[in-house]
Image 1 (cartoon, rainbow, N blue to C red):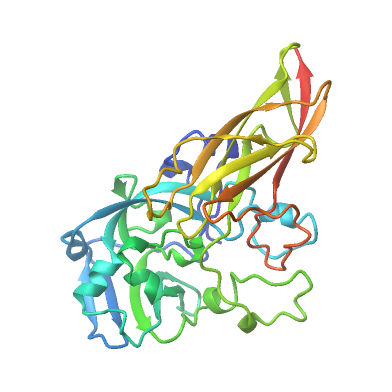
Image 2 (spheres, rainbow, N blue to C red):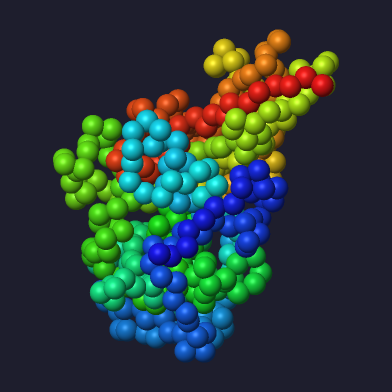
Amino acid sequence: KPFNGEPPSQVLVQNHITPEELFFVRNHLPVPEVDPDEYELEITGVGLETKIFSLEDLKKMPRYTVTSTVMCAGNRRSEMSQIKPVKGLSWGHAAIGNAEWTGVKLSDLLKKLGVNESSKALHVQFEGLDTDVTNKPYGASIPLSKALDPRGDVLLAYEMNGKPLPRDHGFPVRAVVPGIVGARNVKWLSKIILSEEESDSHWQRNDYKGFSPSVDWDTVDFSKSPAIQELPVISAICVPLNESTVCVDEDEDKIPVKGYAWSGGGRAIIRVDLTCDGGATWHTAKLNVGNERKPGEHVWSWTLWEAELPLPKDADEVVISVKAVDSSYNTQPESFENIWNLRGVLNNAYHRVKVKISKN
């Protein structure tokens, strides 16, 4: 089976830019070994003459660096599965990372090939070099409108944090689609297809979709739900850890809390609220690097936050809850019961940690 993993959450939020070794890994199929000198990217489809680009061809084009968060649709799935079992990897809350990606803008490349908004194509399909036992590749697609928008910042990336992509993260070239679910950020990119249809890949048509809590595996119809693209607003507490003990001085009435918040679609985080008394009172966290933007500018990066959270008097145990608010004033639902789905995706209910308070 391919390797999948996430870092300890308390380490994750030590850096605004996630180091390569701390970036979560999600691989659906065996990781291919690619010779960069022999690498080829094929671009074909509606209204296009097929073109082949080498890695060197891509590197000769204008390069851009975009700071963008990538998150798995199943991040925090382990919490949803406590309500009722779901299908998928049992992620904690660290299946997310923020990196500086460098490469060619897909909008530039498509423009160079004569593609514009009048194209009959509606979708851009991506195929990877990773294949299953029948030799069918991992695939996904995004709307052509996203790919053509120069402010959408879709990259054919060949660097991560200033170095060649690590093998687990798509070497030598991957798609980076800011603001969009990680499943569409196809790694080991081998083919781009302009089409009137979405990718026919299993992961586009029969996975990574949301459903009503009442839908089960006997009644589910994947054709009735759209594929996830932009993700909803989410936040998580990374310090302190759940079920941990926090030591405070006898005269101290606050505890330090740290975490992250992010919203898809380029929406900035404008506020993070915390409570440790069940919502009777709320405390607003300090937002650190990540939410700065100019008017009309997208924010693809997460926001790290911190707070000194006031404790209820004489509390020896508290449950800390967090919710974030984005620039469209979207906020998180209070509970997982109302958003449960059989695939365990879109897990953005309040994040909660229970901690014991020990007085020095």
